[in-house]
Image 1 (cartoon, rainbow, N blue to C red):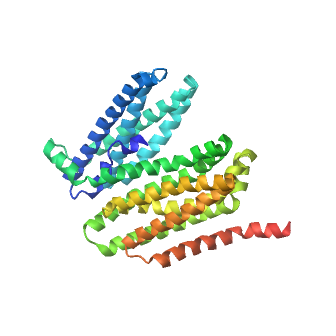
Image 2 (cartoon, rainbow, N blue to C red):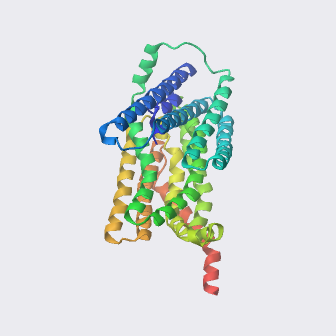
Image 3 (cartoon, helix red, strand yellow):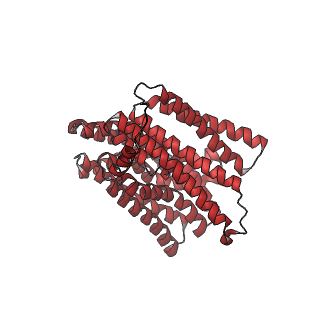
Length: 396
């Protein structure tokens, strides 16, 4: 969470710069804030841990250094990916992500065998991101449009002022977005039990995280071309890109998530075992929310494209408050985790429908028609996928 905002979100400003020299300057600026803010967090944590308030705390200096390096490396990876996205190095970015996944698995397995502890996962996280960062950096250095020159500090300060909207709105927005994704797990553990929290966590790991990775890959390409079309005042291509991306995401997301909605409990029981059937039932309830989130996630780049970051913050505040309220309200009235997940999903669906409506309005796309089509497609696909289950139900 901290690594995602350590660069003060100036990474998002890279895409909106008009030439490579400005992009490189914002890239340097983002990395500067990453290093300085991370060191600041480290010193602040060190100060509090050495104070009387935490005198009995056993967190050592070495752990703080690990925290510092993990924040810096993760944030640098985020920034260099955005810069490479600006340069249209999509395949190199994908290879870097693949390299991270492979190296993380190898490091986690090797270090786990050598010294099985919680720190081995932290080491794996740092080392695998470091491998990814080194790979991306050397790829970037070989690019003909990678500019090497000394930067005037005054010019960097001017760029920081010009792009002040990014840290002003996106830091809190990103924090709320990251916090809200972890919040339900904490609240389920607090309100119900660690077992329910574990079941929900498994649902997110199996369903939400994989589709989020796919959405992020599509979002990178969408962000690049949406920015180019908008900056060049090519309204027709911009609107067509938004419309076609929305339809494409809806198409590729509907089938797998509708299958999970209908057969989720059976699939989880067969693949993971009977102990995880509850996670499958949660997945069934959350599938509509997962689908709409998958569709909206790449499109949220439009807030940065058209410089409407404050509205993104408003939606994230509403979403964050709605998540807390829905879980607390259902616990107070029903004290039933299934009803809590259902209300949580339905309230999230309403918020994301509103978010999608606003994003589509930016591209002058009919909101009512598109939302009705979205609901219609979801219901139609769900019906056809349900036919085997309906037949089996009536036969047996």
